[in-house]
Length: 525
Image (tube, rainbow, N blue to C red; front, top):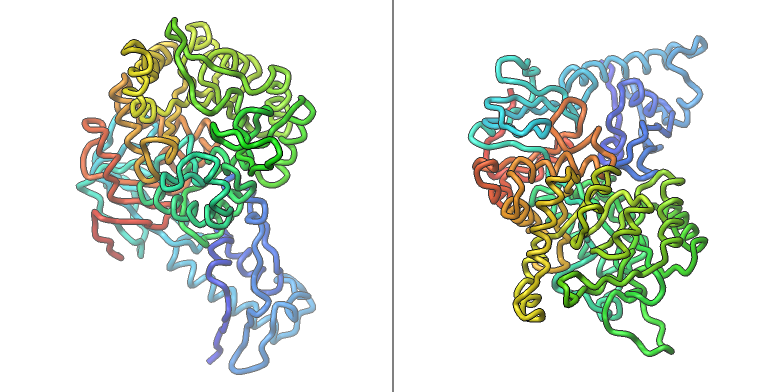
């Protein structure tokens, strides 16, 4: 009997080539070494192409095997193929068609989730007894039980006693930061890029297991372009981690925090840089283009001095600009010319006003606002991140410094409430390993959003649909809808009644693959 042998196909390569049509897979096997995939911002440039190993072979009944190199001249519809080769191609088509019938319409794995309660992300409430059908890494169908057909052979996951939600998104993460290392110049002097990259690998795994399936990483904190390597390793399936957008090297004006710490080295000492110093609009434009050249998904700008703030006698924050309006305007304009977004670190004062004026896409940690600035923020559709947990952690120190009068926590609470009334888009951001929260603990920030005035549903949207929009990925993540990535989490209780449930995530799926499951049994039907 004729046999089909296709060996030495690298499983990871095939996984990277998803989603593939049967014809694309066949083309790879019969000699088309490179397969181009549809562009996907969630993948780096090199991940948009995949290669079928040259060692792949096809043999019939112990006859001569033919490698892709030998079959490369063949076309599935060629008229001059030998009978033997036509039999080979025909049998390959038969086998792929048979396997495809077991896996789904396009040969992909099918998984079905039975959700007791579903927060889909496209509304504020919960839906009961829902079914989610997943084909490959995407959601194929969502609907009430009984209205959705369950494909034969699908793997079924029972989450009937749980609340199912979209995977969480952290809008301000730092995978290269670690509470164990601290934030001071010694972090750069005592720890190599390689060691800190290893810590980053641990951090992204921790975040994913905590339910964060997508993150915006704000800078490599002195590790140059190492964040692009972590992103690549995740995209290729080498390591587990969230979908990442990375900023690579942050930009800042000379004299403020290039070493990312309050300590100033002696002038004759050249210290490692935590951010790239720029001294003119043209240097800013060049830095933007270089970051994008080496893989940046967006640009991080320090519009202010990043080494802390203090209160003035009138209770306003004393904020020092790191660069001129012209420099920041050039950076943001060049980012937009290159079709990427700009995230601007600005607590208040002149840096905040300038960042709004030049059109930054998001304001990082905006705290001290005039009402007119909040109105402009809403009118321009600029997103606001706040890191409330870290502000709360510094409350006692602030009160001690100001004789009990002022604290950043109180100012943040007032700003959040005014921003909500003004219609500002509040984006969930935890800033892990930069203060009170470590990696894996980011969901604590949701508790502060609710305590400071958000409804639980608003807080959930901030960590899902709002962040997806901020990242420009609203067509692929942030909600449980047909066509989006199957990034799904579940908790035991009802987060609309108790937002702290998100601090106890029990089920995580990313791209249709189960990361953890502490809730249910899985059956094959």
